Amino acid sequence: MKLYYSPTSPYVRKVIILLSETGQTDDVELVSSSTSPINPVDGLQAKNPLNKIPALERPDGPTLYDSRVICQYLDDRAGGRLYPTGARRWDTLTLEATADGILDAALLVTYEGRMRPADKQWDEWSDAQWGKIVSGCAALTTRWMSHLNGPLDMGQIAVACALGYVDFRHDARNWRKGNDALADWYAKFAERDDMKATVPPAG
Ligand SMILES: N[C@@H](CCC(=O)N[C@@H](CS)C(=O)NCC(=O)O)C(=O)O
Image 1: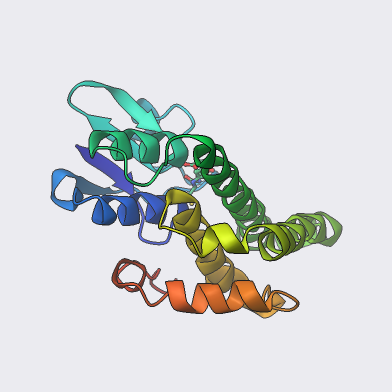
Image 2 (image 1 turned 45 degrees about the vertical axis):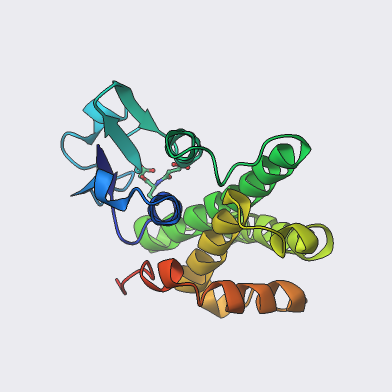
């Protein structure tokens, strides 16, 4: 299989950690594809019409895209460890959706600051996106701590990748304020080997 990837993409990071946790790292070749909305990578659109990473090319079917689809496919392939069955599955999926929503908002703030010309940037819009990150983190703190402290699943990995990305691009905004339990959980989770091996490089 081929994974179209960039070492700074938090959505890709979810996939790489899942590969590591399920013992499939060697089954996937990484294909460098650092893309952006205004600088799309040549050839990526043929794999994912949305021109986004991650995309997973596989021998037995069409290319998969969207990290949540890829993660569920790869977990299924490995026997289903990180998406539980039964009632807890819906919690895991909702937690992953919360994390990805934080990521989506953080990525939009990044794009606004890095890609849009300075005279066209709109602070209120970025602040509104930041509001989603604040309310997402507050929900993690008030509602999700016991799940986060439970057995490892994809919801936890997605939250760690989201918080890692907010640190990476928006450290100055301090998501930790008012989220002590979440900050403590993240500090411990970030010590895992596969988290340390996937810290995004500066740039
Ligand atoms: N919902 C998608 C989001 C993927 C995404 O936005 N990836 C970014 C890189 S971090 C990208 O490819 N951006 C290029 C673009 O928006 O054109 C997923 O979970 O895979």
